[in-house]
Image (cartoon, rainbow, N blue to C red):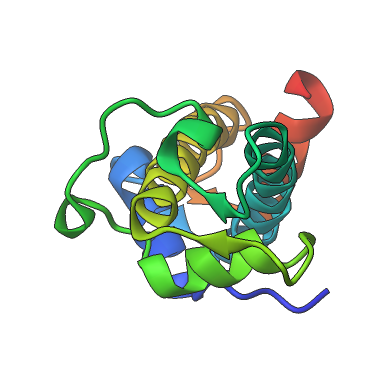
Amino acid sequence: MNVELPFAPVDTIIRRNAGDLRVSADASKELAKRIQEHGSDLAIDAAEEATADGRKTLMAEDFGVEQVVDKDDLELPVAPVDRIARLEIDDRYRVSMDARVALADILEDYADNVAGAAAILARHADRRTITDDDIETYFSLFE
């Protein structure tokens, strides 16, 4: 699988949850992959919502978002999130700018939750670095 999301913003999200812990490059890569999978699944569901409403454009409300945040307040860039949204949906769908920002916000919250749990797991293992094993362990325990 080709990961559309750059690792740098994902690394930043992990670091803001890591406190004094270090972050391995593999942890950022693993979380970016998981974010992409989750975003693609959410877009499939949103496309079904849009279809049910007779639309071919995904809107923020299709992602369950009522108020869209300012894209400048997000760490995740909107363009790769747009590509993630389009990975598994039919080419006939379009993704509105509000939907892109809404999805980026959802994915950033998702990443924060995973990164926070990964930091707890690393500390519990008495390590000073968050690794991809911490990300993988989170998913094996909680999903």
